[in-house]
Image (cartoon, rainbow, N blue to C red; front, side, top):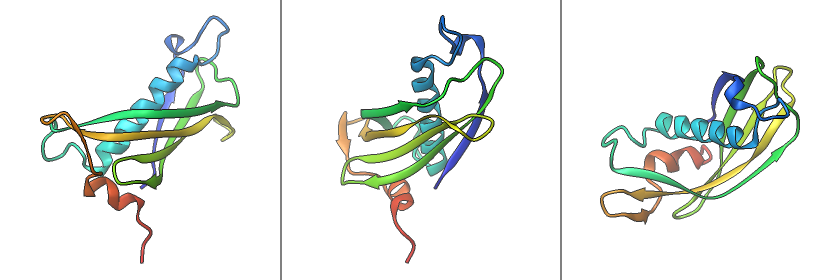
Length: 131
């Protein structure tokens, strides 16, 4: 499952150079990833049971983004392990040129037990190729 969201770059997203700050970009990608988890239904049955933890991020910054630009943010599943997943992210400029791209590796915790768990089925099904 591929998800998309859009946002308009605001003053608070920029740094002293006047472009999208790298920390703001990471926060935007975190919001996009959280929306992906919600779309998968991770929090549907018990919103307090699961938590997601980033264990690695690797983002490349390609182009500047400025206040007022409408950006498109995509999240796409890439690979799954027993207890971790990798999703790819892109922040695309209005002309579809990439501004930021990369991958995030995360695990899922059972917040009641405070342990990392195998990937729940509601997430795992999005990494399987159709028969």
